[in-house]
Image (cartoon, rainbow, N blue to C red; front, side):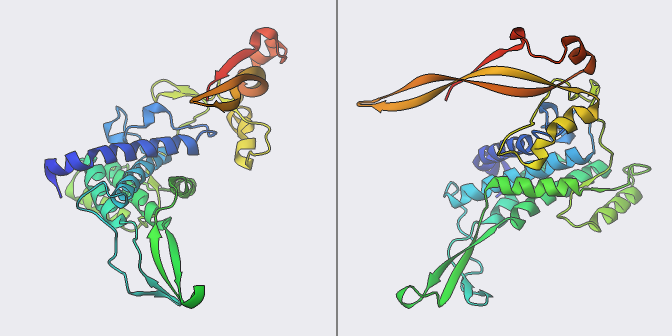
Length: 329
């Protein structure tokens, strides 16, 4: 289905999918120097400056994946009259001891509709446009690559003589992790010099990108220094950013965030104590109210500051620096 009718039917799912991609981008880069700031969240073809670095590649891929994922999920939930399970392989032998069956999530539908919407945003024919379209496709491939096979046993008295299996979407977080790995391994394509809009240039661009796996992220430019503020590029730098130091649930990447955001950027780490007030000891009272107590807990947070600022303050914590944070649940 194409045209205005398709737009009306699918537009809300497309918008929700793009938003889920944005939220996942923020989660994946929360403790990186580049933390998916608001300015980068529009696709680059609609930004004032069309960057072509690996961060732009990730934004395109995760946005495209989010749109495809949401369309596929909404199809499975029965939100669209013209879409249902993918049973095209049902009855076929899938592997030793199992057959295709059940109700597979219809990623073919999600892929087709998301491509129609997302790729249509890219109207250029230069190297940047080719890069963006390639990364859009990499996002869709990521959804397919992270699908999970689910099976049901069949046989007498609960035995598992045969199994029928189908494919299901994973949690979108898994797609985010998958694309974050692709981000770290993104390939740089040297095409900017002389890659114009002539027929010869377009042919060379198409040939170059066709030789790269559709599953890989690609970029044309090196990333700027995200340690430093750059108003022209809309970069805030890492001064003032919070980082993590201690915590039983922190992974290695999070534990090193203070070194990455502060130390390696020429900044010092400043401790700040804060009183966090939250609802606790909640009880249900018949009928029908929930009453909670207010519990106060002192927490320590860490922030990146200029070294001279830390030296002037002596590196200590004063009462004036203590802040009160209220968190309602």
